[in-house]
Every structure is written in C-alpha cells, then in structure tokens.
Image (tube, rainbow, N blue to C red; front, side):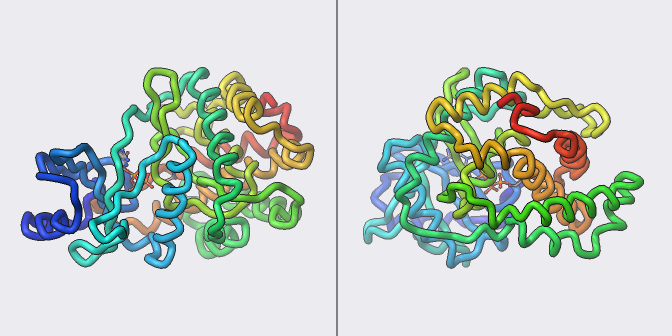
Length: 328
Ligand SMILES: Nc1ncnc2c1ncn2[C@@H]1O[C@H](COP(=O)(O)OP(=O)(O)OP(=O)(O)O)[C@@H](O)[C@H]1O
Ligand SMILES: N[C@@H](CCO)C(=O)O
C-alpha cells in the first residue's frame, strides 16, 4: 500500500495550523498508488488529499507540477487544485518530506473501461492538451526515448527469465525505434500527462470527470500521450497477464482516437508517427515495469506490475503499419 511515511497526530495538527481549512474531521491513509504517500483528509470546510512526495519525485520538479494543476484548474479543466496555506504557498514540508494538500475530485476510476469511456477519455485528453498549450513551464521527459537503452542495460537475462526469447525481441524494438528517431520527428510538442492510465482518470458513469496524478507530466509530443492512452485503455488483459491472450479492442481504440480528434484533429505527421509512438510507449512501460519487477525485494509493501502485459502490447504494435491498424 502506498503509505510510506506515517504522519503523527502532533505533526498533522501543526501542519494544518498553517492552513485556513477549519477543523480536521477525518484522516486516513490511501492504499492505491505506488509512488507517493497519500492521505484522505476531511475538514469542516471540505474534502482533500494530502500527498507526501517520496523518493522518485524530484523536489525541484514540484513547482512545475503545482503550476500545471493551477493552470488547468484556472482554465476550468477538471483536476485537483493545490491548496495554498495562510502564507499563499501550496508546497510545504511534513514529516521530513515535501508535502501538498490538493482538492478532492469526485468520480471513480474504471477497472475495465467501456467503449463510451474510451471516447470520453479521448475528448478529455485533447481538452487537456488544448488547455495546456500556453502553459509556460517546461520539463524534460526523463522517461523519453533517450532513457530507454539505459533502462534496458543489464536486463536481458531478466526479460528472458520472464519469457524465453523476449530479450531478442526487446533488443529489436530498441533498434527499430532508435532508427525511427522519435525525438527528431516534426510533431507538435507541448505539455503532456505521460501516464494517463485508467487509475488516473475519473468518471461519473460514462461521463469523464477529471484527471489526477500529474507526476510524470513533461514537455513532449502530444501524439505520444495519445499513444500511451491507446496502450493503457484499448487492450484487454487476461487476469493472469498472459501476453498470449492479450487483445486489442479495435472499437475502444477507434473511439479513443475519434474522441481525441473531435476536439483536436491530428496532423498528418502525427497520424504517420502513431505506430512507432505506440510501440515506444509500450516499450517505456515494459522497461520501467521490468526494472521494478527485478529490483523490488520480496515482501516489499508495493506489488510490482507485470511487465509481460506490455510485452504482449509490443507484439501487437510490431505488426501495425499505419493508424488504421488502431482504428484511426
Ligand atoms: N485529488 C484526488 N481526489 C480524489 N482521490 C484522489 C485524488 N488524488 C489521489 N486520489 C486517490 O489516491 C490514489 C493514489 O493517488 P495517485 O495515483 O496520485 O498516487 P501515486 O502513488 O502518486 O501514483 P501512481 O502509483 O498511480 O503513479 C488514487 O488512486 C485515488 O484513489
Ligand atoms: N502507470 C504505470 C505505473 C506508474 O505510474 C504502469 O502501469 O506501469
């Protein structure tokens, strides 16, 4: 569970004294999530989330993440809003960690997204991109194509241990993707979420109600964000994560792309690049999962996610030659 840092009653009381949020009524650790410690906080003035940032989030990036949420919220895009203390500052420290209080967002994360939710997610993603086109801050994608060979270095044996012959396939993916030169493609680049999985999107029924968890957000190709979403929303895993039975749901993918294009039509270069971007996005999540899979000690609090789910997606992407293969 994702409560790495415990908050004592005294520390919480002293922390809340710095805000004008009224009396605390409830304070509970949240089990979901793997990166940071999150608590549900209810006070006499409303409901909030208290996040303590753990080791993978760099302190120098926090003003970027806070500014991004402020920018989106000011444009009316549904996302949590950072709550300032009495001194006007949203970013503070608690129990030795950087910490922030954000507003609570209503809605549920879909466990198995419907086709209608995929369409609504596509529209929401494009609305978010449009709202962020004039966001002035920049952040490099620390998990972009340049990082993938480094993540792979020394992991071939772990890949083959998961599935015989997988290491050779991943090495070919890396070569093909390097040859395509994603960073040099002439694609519109601005601020992207970069991790918009179903657990980071909220819905009320089939209506999109907002986005959380912007801690991988960065400046990169807008179409790469769509490629991440195709991977995360349009494939259907078997309960065991067995890549042999992974399916691309064409109808979900087609609706996701159509929803996106109903708000922001893709340029020709983005349509052409979608297969390599989707393959690259699958490789990124395969690699970070492989690193976590091999480096997480047995008995750790957090259960690492299965890299084979993304090996299955890579097998699909290798055969796709145009956006039509995704229903676009
Ligand atoms: N603003 C919010 N409103 C409502 N619930 C929230 C909010 N922020 C976070 N949560 C809840 O807390 C959980 C964990 O949050 P989050 O996904 O940000 O954690 P994380 O450890 O940083 O992320 P991850 O492991 O997904 O990278 C979410 O699944 C959600 O249930
Ligand atoms: N969304 C990532 C995990 C952390 O953001 C994954 O499923 O691998």
